[in-house]
Length: 158
Image (tube, rainbow, N blue to C red; front, side, top):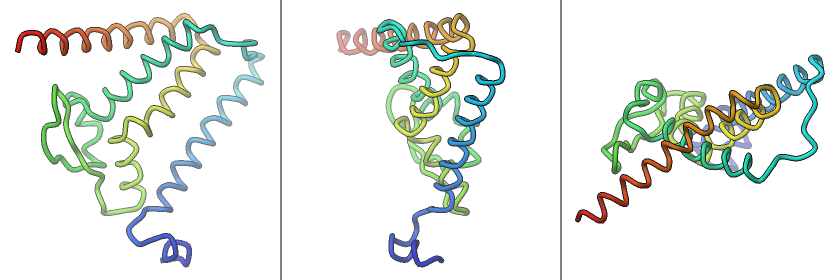
């Protein structure tokens, strides 16, 4: 254990977090380099409608990735099942057997953490492939609206 880990606190997977930060920075750098090499330019600004669409799509995609039962096989190598957590959602905890696995486990169980990656991907998609990205974001937004209506319907029934 390094002095930094001792000073910060035992049990925190700082090397795993550094790996995650490095991966994110590398990915953003690669996307920027590809944009420069291919001549793709950033728009002067994003519209409010694109921002709203990407916001709702990011919310739904982050919940889908980090909480939904159907995506649990993707999280299983990095997490341990704990219990159901509401409508089609699960509560899971990160595995502790390595710093990297723990950090990835935290990323894939935390909608706030995953949201940064998802929003970055959708925003890059608006630059590189806006029509496809809007299609995917619209579908995710429609599912989010459907989820909301289902929850309201269930609430009104009871």
